[in-house]
Length: 414
Image (tube, rainbow, N blue to C red; front, side):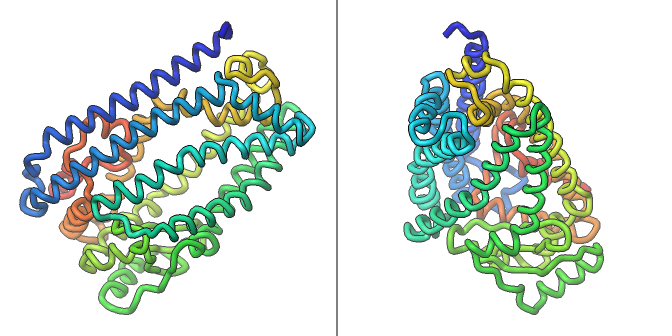
């Protein structure tokens, strides 16, 4: 292993994996240390047994996450420096001409399939052991297999044409191929977001219009106050898979829909649901969605430009265990290794996300009662077994939402 880039890659993989494991251990230690007492902020609303359940649930997820990190690192090493990608390329060269678009597509799809199969046992364990143990799982084995089959077929139906188009552009468009790919990728992402609520979500869940009553009247008044237009307000049967509750907006432009989990509607009072929706509306009204799309487009632009510089560099392939350079190999290697180099940007993206959550909370307080939002959040923390005492460093690194105590304190003092 004389290639210097191989050592750079190993250093990045070792640093990111070690940091992930260290942060998970910190989280487990911190949560366990505060398991015996409910934080004063929540003492009147959350009983000790619920707090301890949340602590145990957090530890169980962190422990499983550590195993996922170790497996992921081993698989990545096997595919790259272990020669896995090179071997798969040689095998597919017996079926399709080496370097052809079909050869490249087969190589990438086989790696994606291999990773999915390796990750499947953990997904089963997460659903039917961890989630089941803490009373959240409502998915049957039959539904799990059905979801897996649907998502696989959908990924193939959407992903294969996109992959073939990308590989064709990489082959035919010369040194500026990366710009054409970026245009296609950005357009594909926007179309997918527009189609998601009407054509993709209904493949997995049933959506029914919110029944007339106090909640629908409150929501209609909220939408009128904020000047928000959507294609409808729907209740989703999320309870058939999990008892976790949530609310979200799906789609962009004129096709956006407001979606409430049936578990959320059943657990929160109408005024509390209104406050949660006011928060979600804040994300739209403050242009968080548009900013996120713009940021994603900028990151993909930069990433594809960088790949355009690497694609003709022999050291890039040799340093990652591939002896036969090619467009598909370059794309695959880039997708596999970039997360290891980008990992330490997590605190920046998490901080930016938490800032937007505070802004959405401030917007919600302009159109709903802060006390209702506090009540809703406390119920959601309790029902979803969200830890009230995360490790500060782990939280700063990963959490897209502010810690519970910080968020509630700000709402109460605003």
